[in-house]
Image (cartoon, rainbow, N blue to C red):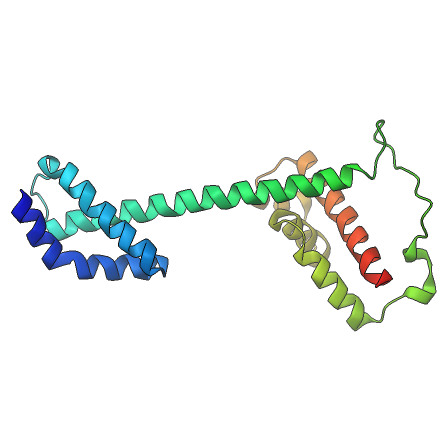
Length: 187
């Protein structure tokens, strides 16, 4: 077994590495995936029935390792996105009192002051900047609803959310956009 695995490594490692690099664009990740592939091949050597070529079997193992790599990466990014979204939710909650009514602010509302109106180009820059700060799902909901004029049920399907969750996303996104635009107007 040991000599056979060594022969496979010498024969197929370059092709396996190139495939992993093609899929990940990272030398370090590709090297790790190659190592994991051969470790799995050693552990599962007795299960290799020789119905296929060793190279085919190794590529199947590698492809599963690549999928696992992206699942882990996606899960980690998902947690980061959830954390960022929760932070924005916490910020928007400050706009309401304990009875879920708008809190009254004594600060000057810039939306009502014509002297602070931006020209179209400047407003577009500020809006794009503020849109970039929204979580991906919030940005998509606002863009789909107000710029692409998509219907709510289509947006709910694409976001895979309930209608009440969708309306909450839109509401919170509008609050954050208003806050961001107000802040940028003050500058």
